Amino acid sequence: MKKFDLKRLKNIDYKKLAKDFWYGKPHGERRLGDLYCDKTGLYKHREWRGVKDTMYYFNMIWLYNYGQMVADIMRYGGLKPFIKGTWRYRWMGQTYLPVLHWFDRGLEGLRGEALRASAWHYRAMVSLTIQQFMRMFRADANLNGGKHNDVWKHNIAHKETVWGGVFYPWAGKLQNVPMEMIPYFVTCHVNNHTVLNYIDAVQSIGLPGDPCPMCQAEAGLFVLDDMPDYAPFMVTSNEACDGSVASTILQDWLWDKPLFAMPQPMQFDDPLVQEHCANEIREMWKFIEDQTGIAPDMELLKKHLESQNELTRFEWEKWDVAANTSYYPINGVAQALYRIYQSQYGDNHMWHKTDKKVRKIMEKCVEQKINNFPLTRHRVIAWSCAPLYFSNWCTWAYNCWGLNTVINMDSLMFNMTIRTDNEEDMLMDMARYHEWAPMRRMAVGGMHHIFELWEYMEKFHCDMVMMYDQLQCKGMQGVHGLFEDEFRARNIHAIWMPHALPDKRTVSRSEIRTIINDYMTTVMHEEPIDPSLLEFDDSQSW
Image (cartoon, rainbow, N blue to C red):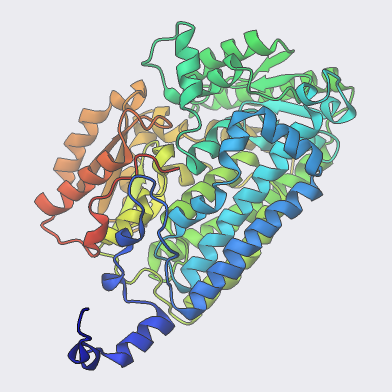
């Protein structure tokens, strides 16, 4: 029998032990990587954040969000369509249960006000996701014996890259639901295994493996008949490239519904092009009126555009705090995903509710000078298109290396408010907003917009660039060398992150972390803040 070591008891610092219990261990002592189960990335036990923050996480994130997920399901349609939809659609069954694990990954290591503000952004995205898939399931002819009910007749299906604001004239009368936003975009972030079978499916019918995997996955949903039949017609777009047009052709072939194509022009800085795009929006409105018999309401449009402008103005306030202070309470992944989702989907009461809560937290941080990311070594701007299967890399990078992702390129796309004082200016601004969609303006919008990076680096006081390198994006691959030349000429530290958007099999999350680790040790000559996060196997993780 092992002898009890009294000396060891005497050497324990009980004051520090009590302090660590009450407040949580200081960041450099946390060893977050020790929490992971091998391969799965799941936790062996919950992260102890101190009494106050652990209780907050348990009550206001875990319990609150699980309760609100059930409440949202009941509010937007009830258990019957939810159960039928979960049983019928693979993407649904694979993503609903891991949602709180998605929270864990994105919020790992956060304390205090940053934990609270970032979690509210996640909550809003979950609520909007439930609103959309429940609307799909309630209308879905596949779940209703092939019948087209009243909900089906009052839905608008559209590509996820079509800005939801163009449908404001029918708010409350018709409901627009993006086709791929939930089955593709959201699922990648929650469970990185979800879309792989859709990519394989579209390749199995002859599509080569080199086009954009986003477009492959979106088409694969239809190849496997994994898209709800929830609307009588569809509105499509060419954003961000011709690959999207190709996926639309397959979707049109397999869905076989009336379709209106609303292409976004490439040379959108030309004033004549603005007029053309505004006319496209008018023609799309006529198409919807012809399909439904419901005329567009310009007063409704104006009302929701003004409401959306409120969201944009608050976003500018957030950017101002992020750019000019160390009191910003939102981490990189929450900021980026929320902004893309909010600005692309369009006005919704949930965004306003969330912004109200976040404003209160942010004002507290500014007034009390709370530094939410005290271990920041480098202020990072992330540029180009991000890896959807590893959007929480920036949470890991801060915890491991002190790399604080202050702003993302996609967050900056819709950087404008829309005039509502007269219809002509309103239409012209809507045209420009729609053209500034994610990946359009700064990925394929011409050198002037692609190189807006330097302007935003200066504005947000960033000293490092995380340069996303989407290996199957022909547009950004074409300017790789130009960026390299500019980084050298400007003496900018830039880490190139290769990835394949939703397909983790091309470049794994572990490989991405290794690239960052190698740069930080060999180029920056820095030591990790948390060495336990340097290497771990999460190959089977959600």
